[in-house]
Image (cartoon, rainbow, N blue to C red; front, side, top):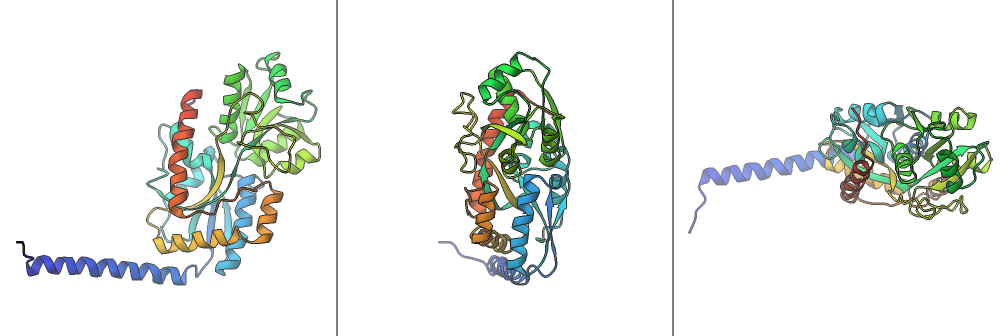
Length: 330
């Protein structure tokens, strides 16, 4: 038979009271949160897909939570610069990261010295959409299918260029995967965002690119660039005649997504409140319609725990792709 000394009993009571006090304080903070503007750090240039979706979600959050959600673009280094800013921020819910998948699930496999850990330095709040990227070419390139593109590029080794929104970005990895499978030699031109990359593709300064669907569908439909394939697992409703890479004989089915994250140690009640607000935004018919126009018809509404599980799974899948390509960056 064991007994509990008064001292040990007192310690347990003190610990229990401390936990209760912390929980009460967390809920009290959530009740008043936000009581001032919130900054959404977007680690890309303005006008790209990440920026466009961030502003749409930020506007919706502002209406629900009654405070402005202000976008702060911090492009550079495949999202590392903006991500590090948030990772080092005060964990109070007033500076958040709205980002794309590569910053969290690709960079750890690419960079030997990454200034943040996606699992230790952040708490996932909510995933926002998922899908693939389009393989695009300038409108005057004489190809209409991925097979014609491969033949054209193979006949001109090292003569074609392609752009992406940064070294190690999803667009970069998708093209490197295609290059390896097809035996192509092309020049990579990294940009600080998909917007400038697509602008130069439209202008004919580069020959090809994998770029986000949301900011390029209308340009494709207007005939200013041509879409040859989609890196996602299925065809997209807005461009039903564009096949997937896998259908075309060049397997690539890894999802891309956007997501909202906070610095580690952000109060759980604040994270929960933000998650519920994001999912409410994603149920708004006007937002759903706009997301569909941007070609996001797959809008998972998940919990922070489910989003965390997605990040863990994608770290394994994208890591395997990076290893297969043999790409590393300093």
